[in-house]
Image (cartoon, rainbow, N blue to C red; front, top):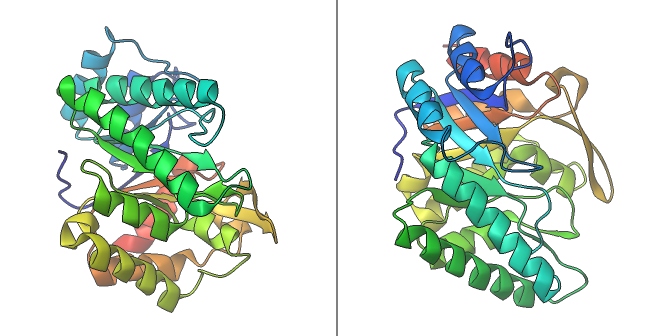
Length: 278
């Protein structure tokens, strides 16, 4: 399993300012602009081949860039048998290629409640991920499987659900999208005390190991009483990112922070500079 040396900041995908935008150039450009992580965006399809993966892994090592991966959007582990089967394959395929690329973790939105009982949905997600992890382990892939906290109450993925799943399944940890949790709550989860409590919940559930290996998403976010609408740049939003970063420093967390704002590298650098203030 990947072990992180510090808190690294990076972009959701290839930086927008990358000359000749492709994955290998993106990794080099991340380092050139003083960032240290990049998320492979497989959100519509797995867009890297098994043949290219070793080149991606080599580039990430040479440039000291930590890689993560975002799986496909078209996933719902609480749906028809056909959709569940297709969703499991999408998670497995993305995790496998991401692992070959040297990514330490893969994140995805796991399911929708579809008006079903929350415990029933939880058990379906757990059963599906158990199968996926078993298949990955059989091939020697130790990549972290990380369901993401989601931005709408209709989506499975409250922090407590994912912490419970991480306790019950090996090779599972959360991806915490603090912007989603802010939107999901209709504007709460936006104070220093609330950020501290979320990190304390992680530590109590999963121990110091989880705080030393975080996968975090942050962006500005527009929301209604129904939750997330769309991502914004941090300075155009009400997300209290300064106190969020203060909480990270207080808990001395390590891992990867991925900017999902429209100006991906701009907000990644903004957060990095704020974090590095004495």
